Length: 396
Image (cartoon, rainbow, N blue to C red; front, side, top):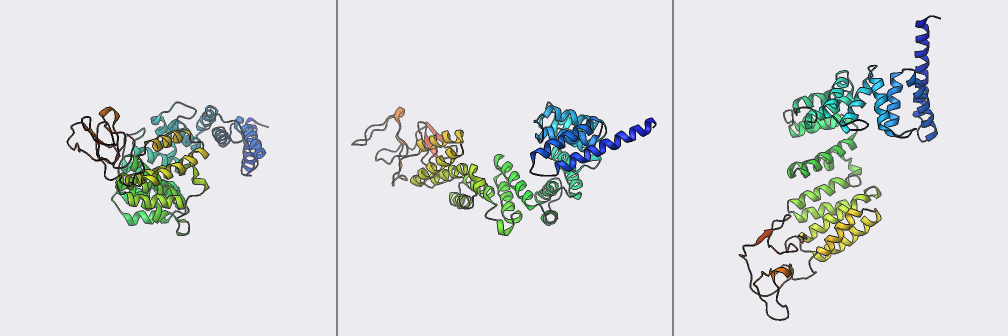
């Protein structure tokens, strides 16, 4: 048998080992099969099979069938890349993008994404589009981003179709065309993925204080991407974030409507977010001067955060509870006492270093005290020594 025949025999054997590993990996639910799959992938990989090298890298990256080791994942991706494996190029790009198993390097990530994208890998095309859209590792260019999203979407890559639709919907990198956006979204069966992306873009807009855009994204999530028969059940996060947007816009009644919808339609999967929505609701109730309800809501919030062992939230909620003003039906008739204000009778005398805030009193009103501050949440004018905001109940 000649050298060429031996080479072909070894190559064929490596391919058989790879296919055996693939068959075992596709049997879901049994850990033993995954471990055996890794063994066959390793045999094939050590014989130079590029697909096995890439899959072995994935196993190390995910910890499936072998102890998770991101450095080894990069090593096997690199071996596969050296043989021109396109999927490994894309995977290596993700390693550099996320800094997993290798030092984070966005420029190198873009280089590997580009290599794989130009060879037709849809995942790399989407990720490259995302880099151009956000200006990560490359100069921001929305038109180029749209181009790569389009290529990936044409291959049926659902997330690229979702983001391409958003580009048309918002007119980013392309002429605004709402009907075109709906057409693109209509071609994907992954409506849940578009829902997640809409909430994601809404969250980003919220954090960047672009509240109108945030509202548009959450409306899309609720009205376009959530199937009608699952609209309430699957819309918890969109309801929560719409409530937060209306809170920021001081539209407390509207905020309360959406926060209550989030609470009403929550499931066990949403329990980790319940403390967040209840705390937001308490803030809204404070803004509506419904202090007693805010207090009860915070107590419920505290229970949820304890159940989910959310220690950071527990401390914050306890501070919120301690910071609430008294439950007084005359809370709207508030007068702040400045340092030189004296009140006669059983109310007593209060000075600057012992200011009483959000307490209804009778006496001289210091409306032009030059030492005023403003509440960072609702903007209400307060004395410099205020401990609570009379407008929204925020602890200062």
